[in-house]
Length: 143
Image (tube, rainbow, N blue to C red):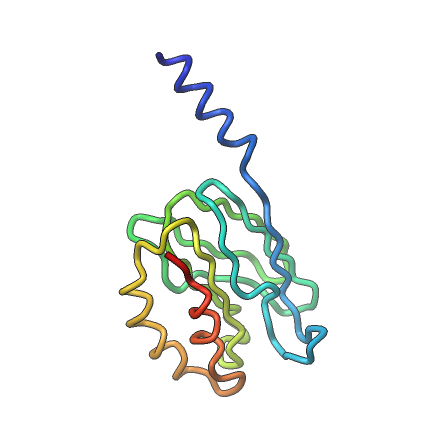
C-alpha cells in the first residue's frame, strides 16, 4: 500500500504544469504596468514562473488561501513558485502597485472566494491609474 501511495505521489508531479507570467511595462495592447497573463487558473501542484521582461519589477502575494505559503521574488529576478493549496492568490508588483500592476492565480476551487471578494474593493481603491483591473480579473474566477 505504501508503494502504491508513493507511486501515485510521484506520478502527480509528472503531470504538473509550469505556466509563465511576464512582468511588462507595456503589452501589445498598449496597457501599461501589466502582468501577462494577469489571470491564470491552474491545478494544485502546478507552478508559475514570473519573468521580469522589463526592469524594476518583482512579485509579492497580498492575499492567499488559509495555511497557504506567501510568495515573493527578488527585484528583476525570474522566480518559480509551486502552488499546492486550492484557492485564490492575489499578487502585485510592489513598485507599481499604485498603477494597478496586479494579478490573480486561481488554484483549483476558489476556496477563499468570500475573503477575496471583500478585499478587492479595498485593493482597487489604492490604484491611481489602470483602475478596475482587480475587478475585471476577478470576473474570470470560476467554481
